[in-house]
Image (cartoon, rainbow, N blue to C red; front, top):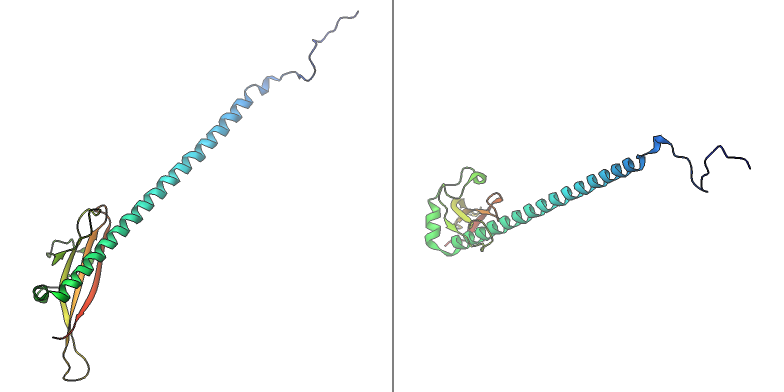
Amino acid sequence: MKALDRPVTSIGSFPRSNKQRGATLIVALVMLLLISLLAIGGMQGSVMQERMASNAHDGAMSFQASEAALRQGENDILNTLVTRQNAYNETLLASPWDWDGANPAASGTGNAGPDVSAQPVYHLARLADVCPIEPGQPCFERYLTTSRAQGGSNEAITVLQSTVLLPPE
C-alpha cells in the first residue's frame, strides 16, 4: 500500500483560508448596528409625534377656554347694565395679542373648568356708535370683546375678539 501525502478530509469540507476567519462576525455586527439605528430613529419619531399631539391638544384647550370667556363677555355686555356702563368708559387694548390679562385689568373671568392652567379672562370696551343711513333712526352701540386663555400649560395662549352690536334702547 501506498501512503498518502495529503491528509484525508471528510466529504463536504473545504480547506480553510486564514483570510475568512471572523468575517461572519463582522457582517453580523454591522447588521445589528444598522437595525439598532433604525430602531432608535423609529423611537425618536414616535416621541416627536407624541409631543405634537400633546401641543395640539393644549392649543385646542386654550382655544375652547378663550371662546368660553368670549361668550361670557358677550353675554355680560348684552344682559348686564353695570357691565355695559363700565365698558363704555374702558379704553381699547393697544395690542390685544400682547395683552397679559392683567394690564389693563380684565372686565371679567370666564369658567373653563379644572383642566386649564388659569381661568380665561375677557376685556370689554366701547368701539363706536353705528347709525343707520336713514335719518331719525336710533344708533346702535358697538363693543369689542377680547378674551385671553391658557391651555393645560401656560405656553399655549389664545386671544380672540368679537364685536357686539347692542340694539338701541
